[in-house]
Length: 262
Image 1 (cartoon, rainbow, N blue to C red):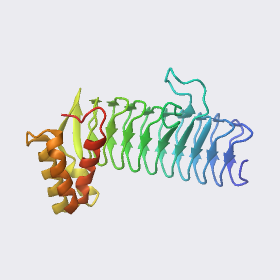
Image 2: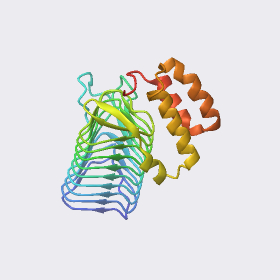
Image 3: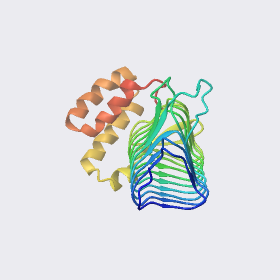
Image 4: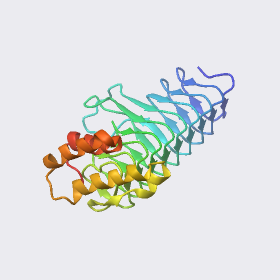
């Protein structure tokens, strides 16, 4: 179903069964398969491919040669009916790839709201990208990666499968991340190591000075106290009772499967 207000270029191919919302524009030579749903006021530019059971929200901008909802590259994938779900107001730049999920995990790949996915960024199967993130040019998120809200993964960086980049964390360019990056932390290098806190990001996002000091103290407990993870956790939990922002450190330490960067 194509809404009467949608503007579809004559050379675009939209299969029967696709749902195109109000005021959507679809550019030349774009291909959209049956099962795709695109929300109102989204702009799909030329030479875009959108396939499978892909749901795209409102007011997104999708630039030329992006590929969304294609089969993933997991060798276990056998053509199962898996999905991609994308929220609102995202900017998806040229040649970005967002692959559908696998039944071995969540069976869906998720991108939230207000994200900037830069040229040739790769979002692999079963990734979860939160809100207000910045994924740089040629950055690679391996399968099952989580990038939490307000985090940044800069150009040419690669995130190993099953890793998490925590909220407000910042991964510098050309980095290889093979363990979890805790919230608020600056990470850089191959393999990536911590370089303090993303203080610029915290200030830009309205964290108060006292709250930032608490986060700094928690960082010191993790990285400079000489304590083990088991010894640090009770300290952080006590701090989090007064400063809820510290709870993000507690969460990553409790759930990490690959360990955190050191």
